[in-house]
Length: 291
Image 1 (cartoon, rainbow, N blue to C red):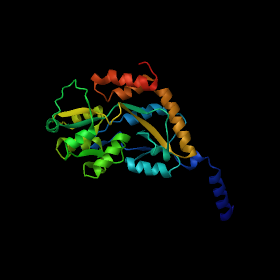
Image 2 (cartoon, rainbow, N blue to C red):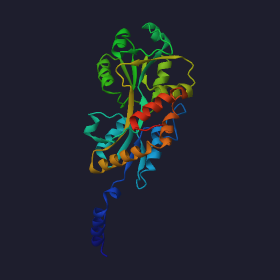
Image 3 (cartoon, rainbow, N blue to C red):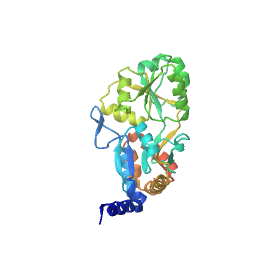
Image 4 (tube, rainbow, N blue to C red):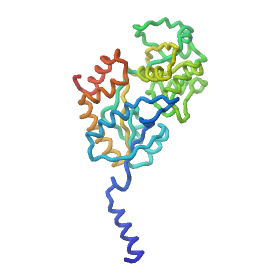
C-alpha cells in the first residue's frame, strides 16, 4: 500500500469511528477523593461515593476523571462534547450551556450562616441550641456594615444569595476564595482566625472541617431567609447530543441507585448522627423512598 493510500484509509477509518470512541467522555471533579485538599485534611467525598454507586447502573459507561475547579469545569463543559460534572446547583444561566440530570445526585439540608460568638454578640443574637429563628442576611449585613462574607469562587449559592452577593461586592463586602485550595476548609480557617466575619455553608461541611482542623473556637450559626430549606446537587453535562445522552443515563442511574440503601448511607456518613432522621426524611421526600 502506498503512503497516500494508507493516509486515505486512515482518514476514512477515523471518520467511521463511533462518536463515543472519537471523543473520550470526561468526568470533571473539583476534588481528588484520594487526596487531602487543605492542610492535609481529607475532603468530603460524597460526590465520588455516590458516583461509584451510579456507575453500577451504567455498566457500559467509560470515562476519564479530570480534577479541575468549578470555573475551569464550566469552560470545559462549554467546549467538550462529552463532559459531565457532579454536585452542581441547577439554574437558568447554567442551563444555557449544559443538560442536567432530572433528579439531584446529592441532597443537603439548607445552608446556614456561621460567625464567631463575638460577631453574634455585636448584633445581639442571643441564641441557644434549639433556636430556629430565621434571620435575614440582608438585614444582618446592614447591622454589621464592615463584616465580610467568604465565598468559594465559581460556586453558586442560589439566586437570592447570589443577588445579595453582587450588591455587597460593590462595597468590598465579599471575599472570594480563588486559590487552588478554594474550599470550605480554607474559608472556615479564615473565619476562625478573624480574616472574614461571616461564612455561608452546609452544617455537615462545617462540622467535618472544624473537627479535622481541630478548631477549638465555638461558632454560632443561624438559619437565613435567603437560603433554601434544602439544596440539590445535580449532574450537568455538555449541551450536545452526546451530553444529553449522558445526562439521561445518569438520571436513570440516580432513579435506580437512590432506592439502594447504600446510596442513602453514602449521604448519612457525612452527617452527625443527631441529624440522620432529618436527612433521611428529606431523602425520602426527594427520591420517593421509604427508608
